[in-house]
Amino acid sequence: MAYKNASSTYKETKIKTASQGQLIIMLYEEAIKQLNMAIEMLESKNENKKIHEKIEQINKAIMKAEEIITELMVSLDFEQGGDIAKNLFALYSWFNRELLEASISQNPERIKTVKNMFSELNDSWKKIVHTVETEDRSATVGLNIAG
Image (cartoon, rainbow, N blue to C red; front, side, top):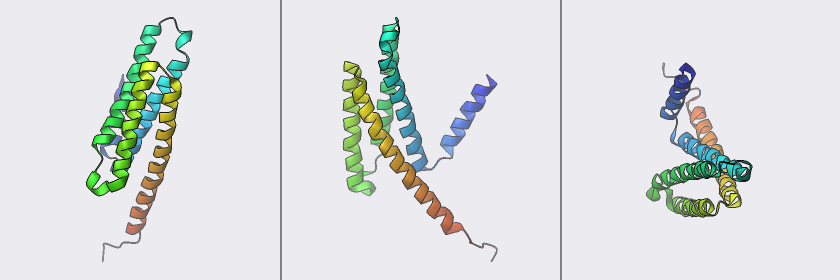
């Protein structure tokens, strides 16, 4: 019980202290995790006699990923983001439609396609965040506030 509380507190602190870019990465990674779980369960679905429970778990994992995608969609800033925000919105919309279809058809290949694209976006965000954080640190290096 103490471990669970410590883990929960750590996650909460990590989220509260994260930059906007780091939060996006966390959302991407959680969506990827949920999609991986859905893929694994779909691919092993026939091995388990409790198929109805498994389908429910698969759909729950897909829905969590869809909720994350929706959260990413509503957080887009179209004024500052311009074409990038519009393109991401279109891509996120496609992700959600594809995941809905995958959920209905129980098709792991469609989920894999979305997950792979999500992974590529995640890698790009990691590079961007790393670059921005490196630039921010180097801008403050050597600053003497003592006068």
